[in-house]
Length: 369
Ligand code: SF4
Image (cartoon, rainbow, N blue to C red; front, side, top):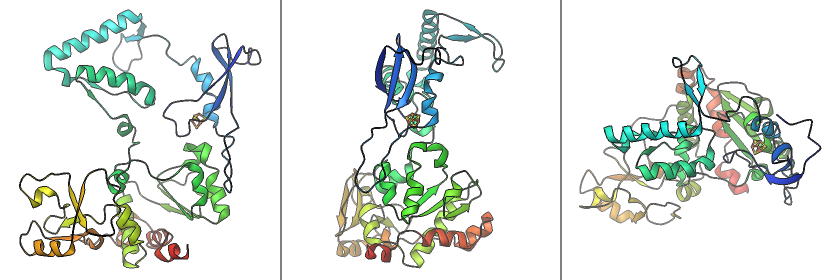
């Protein structure tokens, strides 16, 4: 590993970042000696915007040590084949031709025995976007199966997707500074969002209320106004209890949820499922939903039809399948867990869900602007 001895003797300077899937993709200057990275430093010249603390220096200590990993002794530079029992740690070094032939033989054997769908490719967590491209071409050309890497590393937010219709919400990280309430749920951003973490205390200094919901009192907790300790697995009860407080106390900004979430979609009373075109007509589509007419500024990628109040009522008297209610008045068959339920079942103080719910931006907060 050539790091310190040649650190000040580079022959080229270039730009790069680290893992293509990192949260920040911080801009780094790389100093190279004969093609090897000997030193790297944050660029420190991210643009600054009026009224927001600037992002500099955008980087983290893991990134600053990246070149040590690049040439580190633990990094594999050649293929290995297991020669001992699984888990024994016994490997032998083999050549690239040997490795490629072994893999190709196994792929051909699997296709001949059970077809291409018997091959599943999991790129793991470290590959990121860069390996996705190569993996995608390989898998598609075989008609094999690829796992979604975002899903396998728990990086896919299905709730966000299903509720808002987009995978990612929000603005750039510096917009955190403008928040009035910052709700951190099951995260430790002091460790995992290092380049952006400074916006949290800066927003708090500006007056933001910061809540952390997590099982452990992490290093992020000391920077928050409120820490809610949840038993792992109890998050749904807490979330429903908070939802009940928000609805019972009329805290929700209904105009916002009508226009930005799936709440205006119509729901069948009989089974609680969304009303689909296939419920309404022979051969109707399963991915076409209905919402109350008026007031809907749809962000949905799938088609959403609108039915008038009058149409809805006429159908509601005709068949059970067409009886529905607007989701804005969507009443679950059983009441959502109350704060007392959440606390009794999950060793949480009954005031915790209420305090968390009541600090969310309310209708009156919004009107105060
Ligand atoms: S957050 Fe750290 S690891 Fe990620 S790009 Fe920035 S410096 Fe590199």
